[in-house]
Image (cartoon, rainbow, N blue to C red):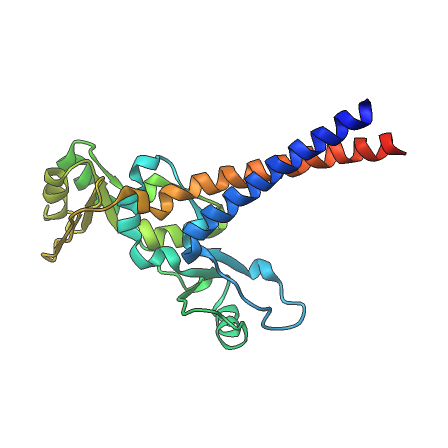
Length: 234
């Protein structure tokens, strides 16, 4: 009968929903460092004053660049963006934070990036194979200054030779990172070695975004069948 069919469909949709929820939970578990939980520091606190963790405020245009961008960002990826230092102080003193965090107030960010002449020199030396890290991410307009602060002072280069040429060019002299994630710092530091791409936080974020969309769709779909079921049973 129609009722049995709807009940069976409901059961199927519930299973799909559970699976979708599980997937979101697992991905969130992998990205535990990106969770920022806080208690409202005051009554009627406007939670939109807290923008969230840097990594969640950006999208990587090309997933192949995830590792390099993660190296450029370093610990800044986990910093928490808020509107002003007043909000920051309130959170630190009354937000009952579960872990140590660095808070960046939007109104105090140093959004200076590489100069036009540095960018032009990098372009020239690399024949277009060095891109300002900032140009490889997108974000909402309100947090553009944050991305400039995180990604505005380094170039991502296609290989080590390009990175070396650009980093040490007298008209550039700024950090360069290869697509593989090796960092060349013109101050003389070289960091590199094996990086497991599977651990890239930024590479996992798109999966989380799509798992969240799938979860929403599964909820909607189940709701539709459940309301049909109610009507039918009535």
